[in-house]
Image: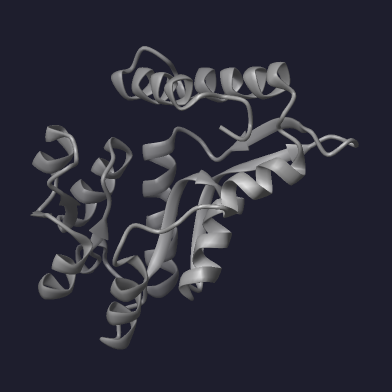
Length: 188
């Protein structure tokens, strides 16, 4: 990866966190340690890595379709605020929240990561804050996600939508399981 970590290292930590063998704080501390060790986590490479991606086929069309139908599309991410902001800008999403702020030192190298808390708990807290600000009950919200950190959102809203490629525990928590993004337009 651009920041020095291999995909395998990153996935190993994510899986350990998901399995409960690595705490969220431990995961973040390990990330910072590895970023510093590899020395590639400059502001320039971080921004390039977090903004140099492509969307899953159908993402732009789904967001535009939902917005045209009158839905307010909100992005609640357990990832970096910088990434959430970039995605929101590209998809014309006005309300977004990422769970992790990147702190750079005076040389523009990652110094630390400030997190809003354990990812699943934080994502649910952010969703509740957004819903409360709009006076919308959680039961009136549909959540789309594919990871274990989305399970609390699915449970709180009762209307989680996930994908056939998601792990079985995520599928079990969802109200709907679809094959591809375009299938969501027929549900909502």
